[in-house]
Image (cartoon, rainbow, N blue to C red; front, side):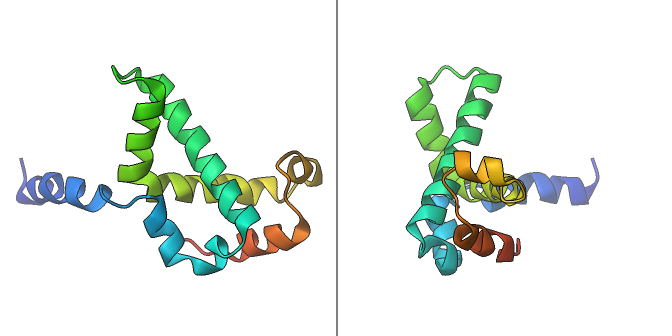
Length: 114
């Protein structure tokens, strides 16, 4: 195995864990400052975590597994949720279903992934 690969295996767990949803909202106060946007991000992140939990069939019960996923990798789930919300904001019917207004979609659309 090449030294670069070994280094990636050592670093990747440290880089990917410990960044929960709170970190995402701390890094993005404009999004967390709007309760509707914050709730939409949380709902999307949670839905993605539930879906992944079902796919991976863990031994954990669903609520505990989802909670663990959101606390350890919530930042990534929030990023995925933002991508979904950006798509939702392009369709007025989906905006209605998700209780999003143009004002909230402007905030979502202005978000730039870091």
